[in-house]
Amino acid sequence: MRWLAALLLLSLTTPSHADTLRIASFNTELSRDGPGLLFRDIERGNDPHISAVVQTIAGAHPDVLALQGIDWDYEGRALNALQSQLQKHGVHYPYLLALQPNSGLASGLDLDGNNQFGEPRDSQGYGTFTGQDGIAVLSRLPIDDALVQDFSSLLWRDLPGALLPQYPDGTPFPSAQAQAVQRLSSTGHWVVPLTLPNGERLNLLTFQAGPPLFDGPEDRNGRRNHDEIRLWQLLLDGDLGPVPGSPFVIAGGANLDPDRGDGRREAIRSLLVEPRLQDPRPSSAEADINTVQWKNAGRMRVDYVLPSADLKVLDAGVVWPPVSGQAGVASSRHHLVWVDIALDQP
Image (cartoon, rainbow, N blue to C red; front, side, top):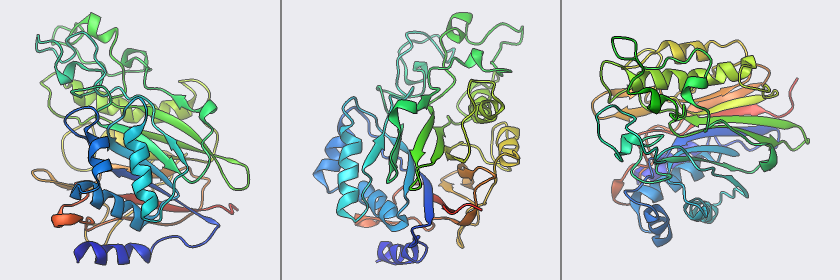
């Protein structure tokens, strides 16, 4: 079976030493059409998409996993159900984090400028219900919940140098009232402190930016995507409060390729050459550094794991081809990206 062969290949790259830490990012695209449906489908245990996602994660066996595309619910039922399924496949994550995302969070205003209210694009982040397409962290390392920083409520206009959209006459798009409440994060931006085996801290910086598409000449989504990526450099500059201590790793979805596709590519290009970071350029034999395969746009690199410059990178990769579950259903159009770092830093 194709998925079994892929798992065997993955097992060859699974870290086996206690001095190695594998950090991964994976956009699972597990979102469903309504609240509670993802939890229902995980509990039933017969969904081929969910099966493929679980097999992909189990094969890569990361120690810390930044997930995107998973629906959030108030009691964390869907995430806990996924945790249980992973444990059945030999992967145990005792520490979970899932804060309420901006996706599906109603604003009460017309945020996309089409003179309609209550539509998915009028939410703080695109979504038909609260929590759709959220993000989460699953970890073998303890999470210091009391010190988690959540930048999801940061207003876009309050970001230094924000590229806010405007009409041709210079007035705010879609309105001054909308920009007064519009948050920057399409989903969320979190700084998650993890406790290493030696008692020291590793900060995980995770996010999922919105796509720079599906708008008009005002380029609202392209500008927002740009600023969602730029937030990390501003944070490291100290422009948004205390600077996260090193070492740290940025892991998440930028929805932007540095060389191809629509969007303001200078945002991700700048992050990839940021001297406080390093880009291990995770790759696969089948698709080089690409991390997603879209039907029309093709293959692109839009998912990233970027360790701080002071970390020693041992290996990195992208799980490609996709692991397929029952009925040959692929886990996601996105592919799991992983980086192995040494715990015994020089």
